[in-house]
Image 1 (cartoon, rainbow, N blue to C red):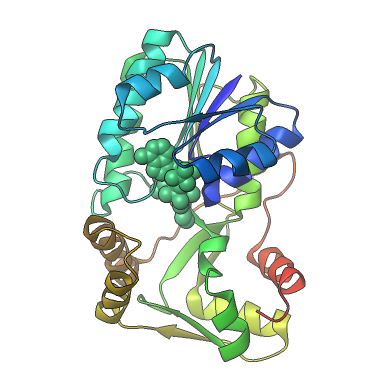
Image 2: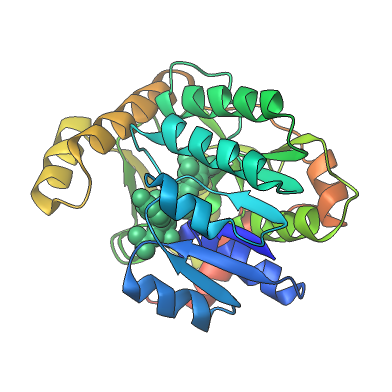
Length: 290
Ligand SMILES: NC(=O)c1ccc[n+]([C@@H]2O[C@H](COP(=O)([O-])OP(=O)(O)OC[C@H]3O[C@@H](n4cnc5c(N)ncnc54)[C@H](OP(=O)(O)O)[C@@H]3O)[C@@H](O)[C@H]2O)c1
């Protein structure tokens, strides 16, 4: 049995889908009642409702577990504490394999959740638990979150540069790689960057969108202060999450997030990673009207 945290988030739902398709038995760790139903509907064999901040919930979640696939909720100030708590509890419980969903270029201390994941990777190595670390870069799906605006207004607007190059990865590929790493022993003990190998500026992404949709899409650098004000008015993100995301976007604005090579990732997948165009074609097919 695999314990999968964050099983109903954007990342976890892709990981769960591919693990279920591979015939793996998953216990989903979620927080809300609605997520329990969502995880079962997606094929989780068991669910556990709890809070990753609660040591008792974590110990309960680990009962009878052979592997952990740990996904931290995004942009939390408590990320190091909850990840360390899970690692320590997994060690005590005698878990056989800890797969850590980290991040591409965890060495980038300027981006707070990258720094936190670097600290957590070190804690995992020091725990002596058998491990695999996956380091996905920016999901292609993050670039199409405002698909309606892209299709209907021809605007791809976020508050950072249109020209800095970004390395991207398809979440479908991330989920597929997660299932391989959990379902075989072939890649255990490694740290793997999950990047398609393709670096694109947002202007280049908009050009792919234009080509696939057959209508103009322009990359726009929107105002960060306006984005922050909008988030505060919506009220879903905490102030700490807004600050962490702002730090990340300022960094993207100044330096992008380039590099990346898809060859080793392709070895895990057993095929070449998807290209950005593949993702945009899939979006256009799924939601042609936006
Ligand atoms: N976006 C990217 O491009 C990218 C790239 C690389 C790595 N990452 C990393 O991927 C990770 C996941 O991101 P995401 O956006 O998929 O996550 P997310 O939306 O924050 O995760 C939501 C999931 O976590 C559960 N959850 C939230 N708080 C919880 C708590 N206190 N206790 C137990 N469960 C809790 C939620 O359950 P409920 O719904 O029941 O609350 C839900 O299943 C992050 O660490 C992020 O840094 C992201």
